[in-house]
Length: 335
Image (cartoon, rainbow, N blue to C red; front, side, top):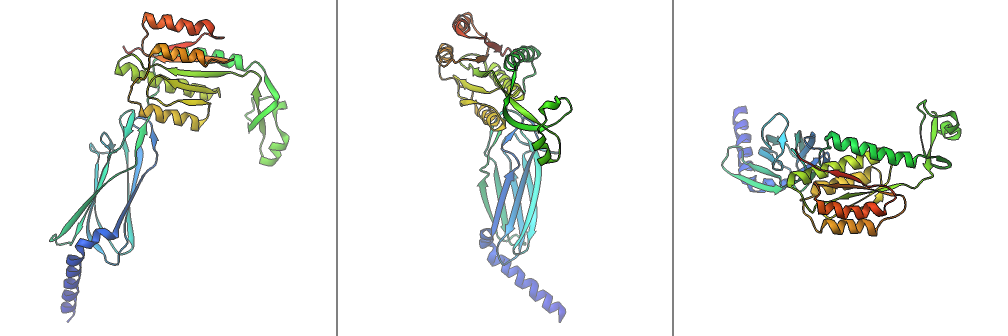
């Protein structure tokens, strides 16, 4: 008797699966996410997927395959494909995660996922495929050219000296934790009492210093332009460390930034650099003309460019002639 009941139940399940197969995909819902939208080259990025069965019937046969963007390499594998076989009870979910990396600067999109399901005997099956809509932008690498880094460090050091002539104790812009290196007179006792630890004042500066970071993309090879983007990143990160406001503009396909600083400001620029197709929109002469036209008091210029011609250098002399401070020229030479 028990054997007959078991056989009957098994037959019923098989029939349910057979006739429900065309409708099973409607009750499955797949969600996915990346843990970042802006990444370093070769940084480990987490991908998380969640497949839910929102129906009233179990789904005994599911194949879920995720195809990550072209160029992605899943950790521990040599491919960008991930696949799972699943069984889901009604109103249950299954999660999976993996890490992967992307090789270099650019915008990565175009991944897909595939869902195949049907009856567990394989008589009927259905497949759907959907694009993974999220994109990841990979920023340029940091510049490791010692001559560029040395020239830049000296120039930003000079800017900091000019800026740090005197701190104005009347212009407090915030507080930070006491490290033991600050003079006792900078301790804010009311702020320390509120936080329960020693806090010192962050004072503003009496000298209004700002920088225009300018990128020339009107000439140069692909490798020289790529290195130029790396130099832009290094320049802006060093300005961020010194809390020096900077504006950015270019004659290429990299979006402009108004004067400012901070993580949001820097990340906006990193996204623009990552998206660049290395195209140029107007000439080097016009770029220098813009620098001259928009010049203001206290401004320093940092120009990043592929190697300049003699004609370019003659045009650059016009900018140097009218500036309060000699511009810093960083040429992206590829050896």
